[in-house]
Length: 192
Image (tube, rainbow, N blue to C red):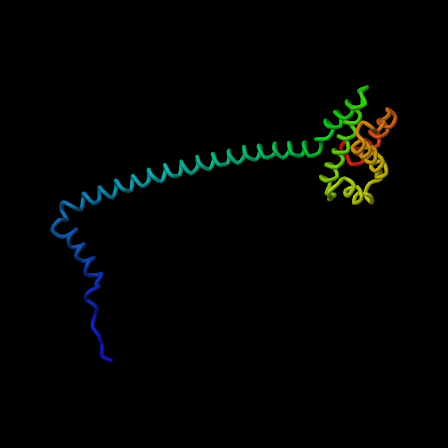
């Protein structure tokens, strides 16, 4: 192939030369000082903008730090609240059951035993024992609970109350013994 000449349709040097000649040629005496002044103004504005941007960045960083600190405090409070509520929601409930058992009314005793049984079901579920009924959960917990026999005995009394209703003759001795069994299981599970 033959040698080709320079490409004239995209000659950047030519365009830059035209701009240079125009700025420093005929307009040089009037345009030079104006461009210098314009450049100084643009530079000063850039410094001001950079200072404002830096100040805004510092302010935003400090604000973000303070917000994160407040969020951490709130999250710690919420976590502490959750720990407190997860560890001790039952004592208030068990106190209610104890108040029912302190009554002279047999129906309060029945209600106290039924509520203690529901509480035991929920505590075992929270501890990871699965099953459709409390009996299923007690079967799973059997190896792990020293008070499993107390739990079964108390649950049997609850079943008698639930199935026979007011026909079941609940004596004070049986009621107090049943609640004492529930209480021993709750103590072992760490909720009473």
